[in-house]
Every structure is written in C-alpha cells, then in structure tokens.
Image (tube, rainbow, N blue to C red; front, top):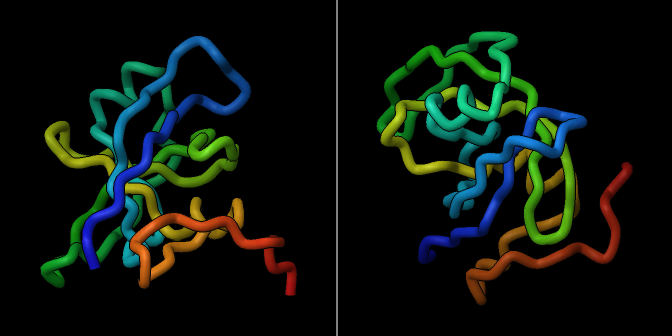
Length: 120
C-alpha cells in the first residue's frame, strides 16, 4: 500500500491562538500521533506523561506525550500526541482516525468516512 498523508492541525485543547499544522503520515500501525517536540512546545502543549513505545524496527523508546486537540478532514478529536524528535515526520495514529470514524480503504489508498462511528 502507498503512503497516505493528510493535513492535520494540532492545538492546545480549548485554544485557537497557536496551532501546528502540517502534512501527517497516516499510520494505522501507530496507536498515538507524533509531532516534532519543538513544534508542540511552540504552541504551548504541556507534557503530561511518558510511556514506552515500540518503533517500526522493533526497538523500544520512551517518549513524553501531551493531550492535544487534533483536527483533520473537517473533524475534531483529542488525544495523545508524542513529543517526537525535531526532525521526525509527523504521524497521525489510528486512535485519532477511529475516534472520528475515518478508515483507510486499502483498495484505493484513500481515507474514507464510515457512515457511523461504532459504539458497540
């Protein structure tokens, strides 16, 4: 499957002033989203926790995370955003996608809205 990117805006919840907006790689293998730490700090996102993540190559790494408002494709959600390395490509994780009812269509390699968000 090819790479899918989507424009995402990350904000401190409940604020409109500072925003980090960029093309994020859609990664259904990633649970949480990730953005460069310098950009998250610039908008004033606070670090609220730290956890261990398994990277694509199988190694384990600890990262700080904050709780952010995440906006894409006309939808708004909130969730964990990892304070990644400053040169890291931003990643939109599956938790953000699922919370607004968007999936990846493997045949077309496009993001598609579900008719309803599952609540079962």
